[in-house]
Length: 63
Image (cartoon, rainbow, N blue to C red; front, top):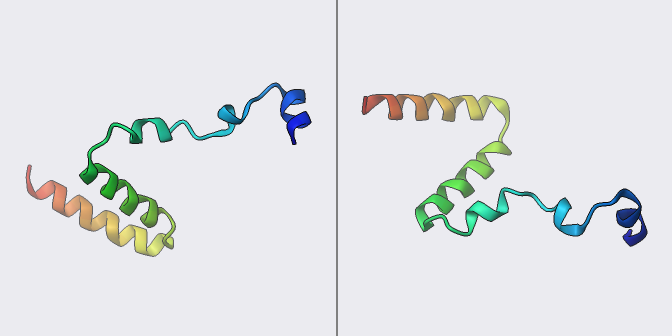
């Protein structure tokens, strides 16, 4: 694997997701929401649609 990385000109750091960096400075509440959204992404489309409707209704209520 090391030779392949050298061949392709990439490092291990290049292969890590860049989204990890912003998580370092987020508040605990934000991390909890991120975990929820990560779990939601794994759900079937039907269940995601229900959650989207709920979020839309909840967020629209305050406008």
